[in-house]
Length: 224
Image (tube, rainbow, N blue to C red; front, side):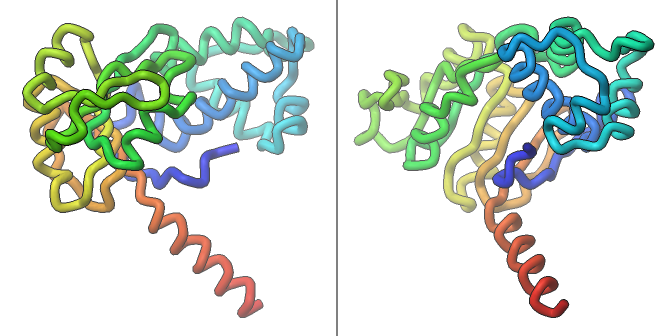
């Protein structure tokens, strides 16, 4: 179930000693639990959870143990309670506001992406330095705004996450602009390694790296 589009390149220490790998798996478990709850399942064991979603039961128990004693002996996990606990641990038990910088094809697609506007996240602004784009809106009605509105929107909406969807040469400048405006967490889609600042979490998504990994896998298979 992990997204094939995401390449893990995250700065900053893991929170409370929980690794980035563990955090990603907890996010996967949360999505699995949402499906179970929607299907009316009330309790489930780690073995059944692993079997149903093609996961590793021992890894599930180890990961959940990082959050305390969550299971019930002889019963397993109460789906609703575990989902609530994971949502709280991942910080998605409340809505976190997002702005996107870059109103090209990628930025507009991200702004309209359902995954960025559900279950704890909400895109509240889309920005670009191209005057010709200002005044337009995405399919979901998110207006494209000028850069001089950036700080005001971040402050008034209490935005916590910024997404960079600009070409590589402009990415660092945009990153600095977002951080200076008060953003402390950045998702970077530009294929470039950003200079990092203390106290700012940065995760980069590089589709080329994923494609090269697949190419390597194909090469290995053919050698076998």
